[in-house]
Amino acid sequence: MPSLQVRELPENIYSLLQEKAKKEHRSLAQEAVVTLAKGLDVSLSLKNRRMELLKQITTNPPLDQLALDLVPVDLLREDRER
Image 1 (spheres, one colour):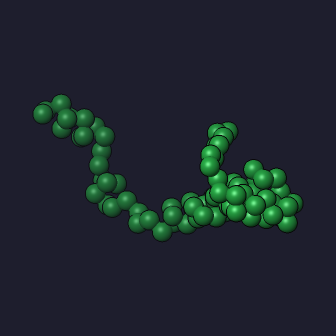
Image 2: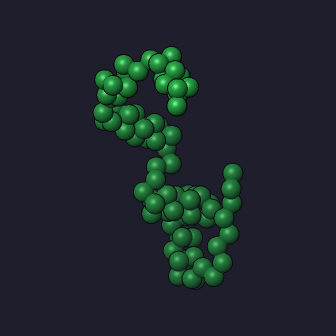
């Protein structure tokens, strides 16, 4: 898993992160990951990520009929004739 080192972090941000980590019973590193994920609007839950992916799959329009009617042999022949 990749790691991240933050230099010149303002003292007030560090203190707030430390307080929140203590309040949530997390390590400072865990709290930093959770805070970054919230800020980037990314879910850490695998279940939520799967649900979002399934939602995207079901909302995308299906392949159009033209794509379904294509025959690979015909495409190969067309390509060879170029």
